Amino acid sequence: MMDQFPQRASKPYSLLWRGLIKSCPVCGERQLFSKWVKMVERCPKCNLRFERIEGHWVGAVGMNTIFSFTLLFLGLAIFFFVTYPDIPMGGWVFVFAGGYGFVPLLFYPSSKKLWTAIDILMRPLEDEDFHESV
Image (cartoon, rainbow, N blue to C red; front, side, top):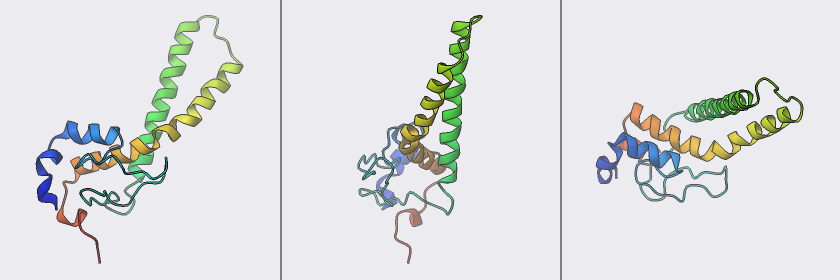
């Protein structure tokens, strides 16, 4: 099965772009989520198993956390820079906290697919990634 997709899987920017837009990094299939956070176990098109090793999704959680904190930091930095020296406190803290609470939920599906793409770049695909284990 893997022989059908080697040229697509070898381009890092293609893998990363597909992961970012919630597609299968190998074949580009888009129908991978039945609900916002419910993902299929294997790609319906190329049969890639997404959880390639035990604990695979820890990287996606870490990446989601880093992305969320980066956005929070940038948002606060811009806010403080624009409003300095009369930085308004109070309600703005709740606005940033609420926004920060939604960012991980919004980025969750992309983080899982993007992490799978990064994992493929770090550990190249093997035949076992496409076949059912017995």
